[in-house]
Each structure stands twice: as C-alpha cells, then as structure tokens.
Length: 145
Image (tube, rainbow, N blue to C red; front, side, top):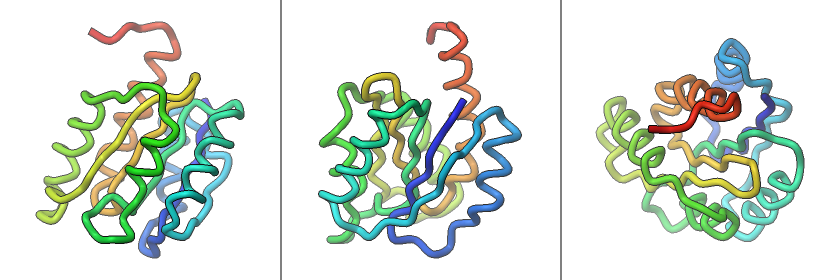
C-alpha cells in the first residue's frame, strides 16, 4: 500500500517516526509535504493526489477551531463519501492524549479509491497504525461489519 502525508502548518511532527510506523504496518509513505494553511491550495493538492495511485492521504494539523484551521473544509471539498465511524474513532482515541483534542474537527472520507483522512497534530501517532491496518484489511477484501 502507498500513502502520502500532508503536514498542514505544523512544525512538531516527527516525520521519521511517522514513516517508520507506517512502513512497519504495511504502508509505504511515498512523500511528506508541508503546506501552508490555505484551504484552496490544500483542496487542490488533495484532489491531485487522489487522481494518482495512492491508498491513503493523511493530513496532520489544521483541524482545530482557529481561523486558519481549514483542513476539514479542504477535505470536504474533494471527498465523495464521508466515513463517520472512522472520524469518531480518530476523535475518541486522540482526545485521550490531549484535553484540547476535544476541539478537533476530523473529516475522513474516500474519493475514488483513496482514503483522505484528517489527523490532529496531537495524538495522530495513537491512531495511525490502526487506521493503516483497517485500510489494509479493506483492500484485501475484508468487508466492514
């Protein structure tokens, strides 16, 4: 499986650890890009990436309630279907690592055959491996219950 990570305006993301964790769980992160918090640019990049052969695109950061937290809005512009169960899972698990996580606005969906998943900057490492494992199962033909 192949994936991409877009880091939205965050500086504290441990990219090496993220790539290592993903690869240990069966997903090759082909590229990590840092982007400014500009909704139209993020949406355009997400759209371009979903036209390529990726299994998942993860955004990290930009999910809070600040004026420049626009990752969810950019994601909503391009996904065909939302996945509320995945959104709930990410929210419920990441809020355990930081009290302010309760203000995270998570969007997870699919466009074409690519999952597009927003992760908050705090606690993303708590859920990334489980999400990759679940995507892997789906790609192998295991239907969700």
